[in-house]
Length: 168
Image (spheres, rainbow, N blue to C red):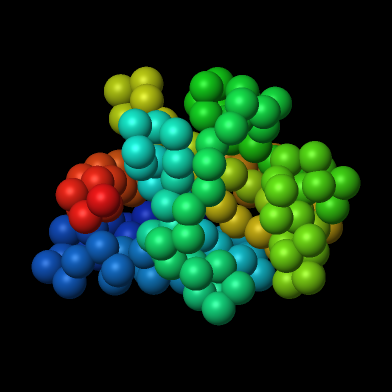
């Protein structure tokens, strides 16, 4: 538990620093890698009236470019995460194939498990924190740990969404 508190404290300090959200995102990436591990870490913000998400951070900007957008279509995954406001934990490549159209790229990166944590403000999802690694890399305690970090992202995600919409 001490490691989680230490990482939450470090991320909170990055939130109040004047360096901007990029510093917080990189610090959060480091915290997640330390606490649960990952091969890929991305942050997506809801834009365009809730119909799309845009990537604002990627630990692998070559494979998953910044500002890459995805349409949020009505799927069972979307029912669970977007409309149900619940984390999703895919343990195997079969789970990844079920949930994501870009599953081939995910598999090519050596990822076969995924945790998506919705970032929620007043009952509305404004983005997701996404952590991927090899098959069976995560257990339920990883989901619980990652969920503790989502509130730190609420203000930066809200500001990112405004900036994205103003340039559209």
